[in-house]
Length: 457
Image (cartoon, rainbow, N blue to C red; front, side, top):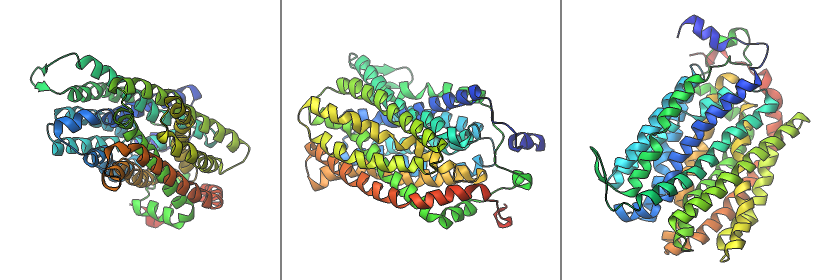
């Protein structure tokens, strides 16, 4: 990168970017996030067919949904974030979108468990390039009191993507199920679930091109020589550990809530199909529609409320809202999977889906405002490492392992989901409440931080 280009990227500016363009950037990043969750979540709708065609167990499926994706998604987020703190965040995101889209297509070529496992790892590698740079990018487009709302809209991509994964997956299954033998040119015969991976993966390449309409903003909060200083990853880790009473409750509290969300999303469709006897296409449409409509309400509502509270000077508003949502999630989350009546199940599932979505926008926003600009992407990557190794890595596996090894009955998915919703949010609420005072202190001290000489590369 030339000195002129570097100066363009890092020179401080007096005003924030135009709101209209800033919200366009939110739109583009949300589209990318939506596609990431379509590609990530589509597997949960295909559990039955993949188990049948590849001869897999529930725990093997749980590993495909969680650990296969989560390990590289989490670990590679750190070196990618290191690049994002000093280079073009837009370019990094665009490359990641293209990579995970191609690896989703590769899932469709898999004809064995190891091949599918490897392709899912590749999807995780590509998606590691999205959120840490995106969090950092948006923090330079929006002032702190508006950042929660912006990240809340971005976080809607999780649930828009998950909902569309079910709905579009159901449409593809419905279309392909009427074809006795699917034979593709140059590929040959394929299963229906392989067609689904092809059709959801390829459009992501267009999203990668759309990212090039996003401008790299000037990095804010940098003064004088700080503009050209780089902060090493060891300095970012040191920053976290020196403020562990703030960051640990944030990381581990949200990890447990993430475990609840990912575990529920991975196994609820199969629970409705296997235990309650609903059709796969029926579940795809109706459950997908519930997620698509209700979860964004939780994300956007939490972002709006956090913004209002922050504007009144409540600096720990994001964390307070997360803690309260965790408390409210316990009774509805425990009860919903145990209902035999469909109206009762839906009545409890509505607030459950809304509350599960609350942390996914304001959680990252809470992190950005207490972290100096030059290490935001790296600290975000550590956050993503923790929440995904625990939440995504263990959530789907926990549900499957309870059913297969504790209850020894695949029809007990409802009890497994109920136990998960009882334990994880309860622990999360206790952990998050314990860190509120320290979060307020870190918020107050964030503006005074400057990189030390030892933090230079």
